[in-house]
Length: 219
Image 1 (cartoon, one colour):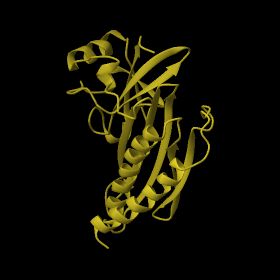
Image 2 (tube, rainbow, N blue to C red):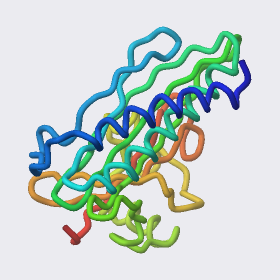
Image 3 (cartoon, rainbow, N blue to C red):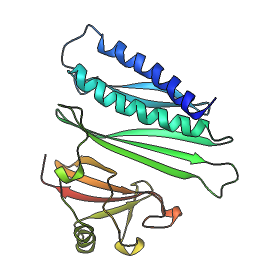
C-alpha cells in the first residue's frame, strides 16, 4: 500500500471519529479533567495514545483535533512506508487553562541497521478560543543573541535527557536559531516557556533532547 493510500485511509477513519464527537448531545462546558481524552492506536503493534480535545466549542474542537489527526496520520504513514522500522510515541500536556493548551508529542524511530534511533519532537500551543496555533513571540520575542544572553546570565535553565537532567552552559554549543518547538509550563505559580532542540543540534546524541527554559510574565 502506498504512502498516500495509508495516509488517506487513516485520515478518513479519524475524521469520522471527530464528527461523532461533534454530534454528541452534551453541551455543558467540560471541566479540565474531562476535556482531554485518550484515543488508542497501534504503532508497529505497540499500543499508543494521542489526545482528543473537547472544549465547549465544536468549531475549535474540529480545528485542534484535525491538526493533531493530520500529524498522527503523517507520522504513521512515514513509519509504515519504511520496512523494519520500530517506533514508539508519547504525548504530554504541559499546560492547560481556560484559554491555552500546550501539548507535546515525542516520537522515537529506529531504522534497521542504524547506529541508534532518532527522536522527533512536535510541540504546539493552541488558542482554545479559536483553535489557532500560538507563536512563541506572543509570549516572548527573542533573538538568538537574547537567548544566548539568557543562558550566559543564568536566567535560562538548560535540561538534557528530554528535560530530566540539568546541564551547564558549557555542556551545549551556542544556539544558532530560536526553536519554534516550544511549550508552556507552570511551576510554583510562575509561567515558563521551554524551547526544545533535537539531539545533535546543541549537544551529542547521548545528551538527548535539549530544553532551554525561561520564565515569562504573561499568564
